[in-house]
Length: 179
Image (cartoon, rainbow, N blue to C red; front, side, top):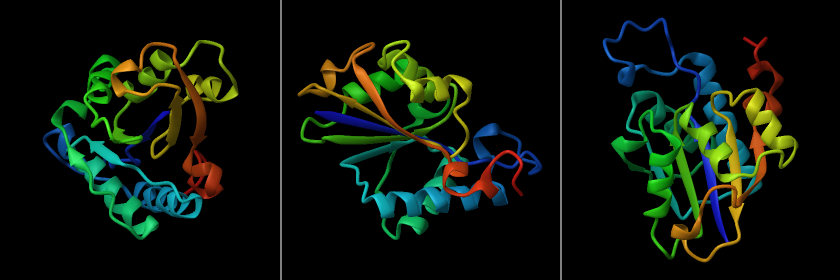
């Protein structure tokens, strides 16, 4: 059994005058959401054998917040390919995961993360997938499980989406109408 967790970066600041999208930081709500997801990881006792993340500023700051909330380091490896990656590129990274790892956390961006869910889970496979189809909000954590022995065996429509946790599910103030 192999498990992939996907975490979209938290809400970034469009008010910050940066030259490159890559350098955009989180806003206040994004920092709160990242810490909230971190506390969720702690409370659910979720751990990852491998963490691969985009090196974009908003992803690094998301991980900082998650680690603060979880009260532990995630020891991410930063891979430039994750920045604005397509689903096939993310699947390449999954296939390259160390054989002894059972769980992988990818931290990155949309639309690649939600497209990876659509690629790896069967169409019409449940309520959670329908939620992803509506929207994959910032700082949302998804979990897919695969009945395979090797990461290389993960293929289209072979996974089951078993978790889709949005920050607003944990704290309504972090929802679209929150502050």
